[in-house]
Image (cartoon, rainbow, N blue to C red):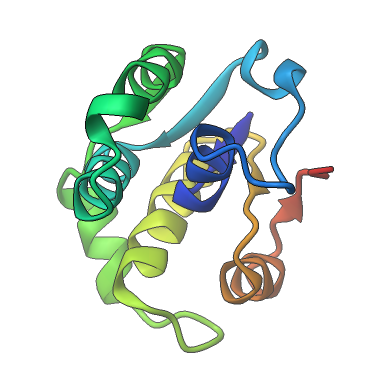
Length: 129
């Protein structure tokens, strides 16, 4: 299973130079429901929701979401092997929850801090080009 964070979704929506190949979105991809809120917030802040909202909606429709329920939030309260920002901790708590349910989880991120923390937790990183 590929778990992606907001950096991957926004890289695609904003057509950044570094973004996942189209094939990335064809396979099953998973994220926390948090990615939806983070992404819409970013588009609204920059006045891009009207222009890019349909692209974002299409990608969100292809995503399997893990809700921020009590077990995920409880994991986020526990220590991590490296210092994390709050939203990164919630993403990694979500991925760790999935792994605790015997899911084979790879992390897709463009965020260096998130990648460092994921590796420290024993996650394999999904290669992004």
